[in-house]
Amino acid sequence: MRRLSSIVCVERCCLLSRLCSSRQPQLWYKHTTAATRVSRQACRIQSRAWTFVHSSPFGISPSMKSLKLLYELERQLKLLPHNSPSGFIVTPDAKALDRWFGVIFVRESIYQGAIFHFSIEFPAKFPEELPRFHFISPVLHPFVHPDSGAVDISGAFDTYDVRITDALAYIKIMLGFPQEGIEEGDVRIVNQEAYAQLKESREEFIKAARDCAMKSAKSPNTPDSAIKFSRPTDMHKTLHEFIVSKEWTGRNFDWAKYFSGLE
Image 1: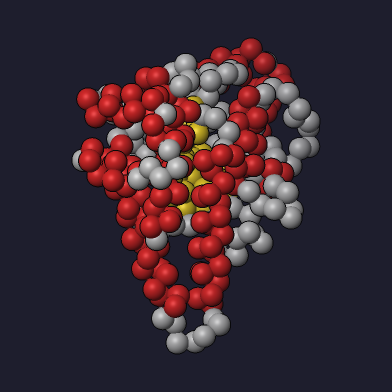
Image 2 (image 1 turned 90 degrees about the horizontal axis):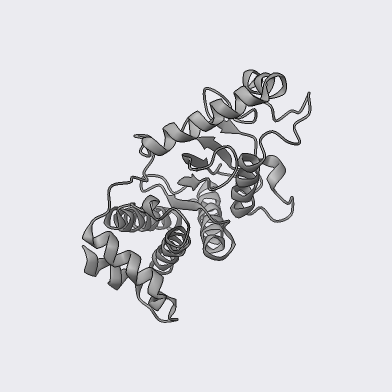
């Protein structure tokens, strides 16, 4: 469990480092103490799940599927620090390890400045069954369902090596070029109204998409996401300066000890 805790800490801080070095420094207002609590709670939940798996009286039973899923989710977490595209924050849900919450900060395209929340849900048979991606924030796009926020991300994966980082890259490209490469009859189109507006009146679609982005930036928090933002405090400033200093890149740096000192 300690190994997973360190993975989550490194993942979170690598993503924070990318965010802090971007052109939008005002967007890194995430509570570090809250993020630390989320990581610790997630580890405790996994610990309970791990105990349940190994105490099952049925030997090789459905509980082994849970163990396999935990191993796979740990593998996916390991991929995030070094393979995730820039502009993302991703963290496991403290209440359910098979659900992750995330935020994408869009820096270019017609959605520039947007802060879109999303969730990723992993089925019990993952990676044989692909994860489900939903935008929590309203997003105007032909590939985003207008009611559920669901996006078909099946085209993002290599059949032989499913990586959640590929899904993040797919979403980033999708938001980067929404008005290109969409043909009539494309099975990924789930918002016919947005598609019709894009084809018939591109200027109106672009204006509506920019309005959507501005609304998300003005109200960056949503009750359905575990990731929350606030105005910067002295603690945020301290963490920002520390991340920029690169001191955390040391091989034996103890993130758990560092964050416990901030609380």
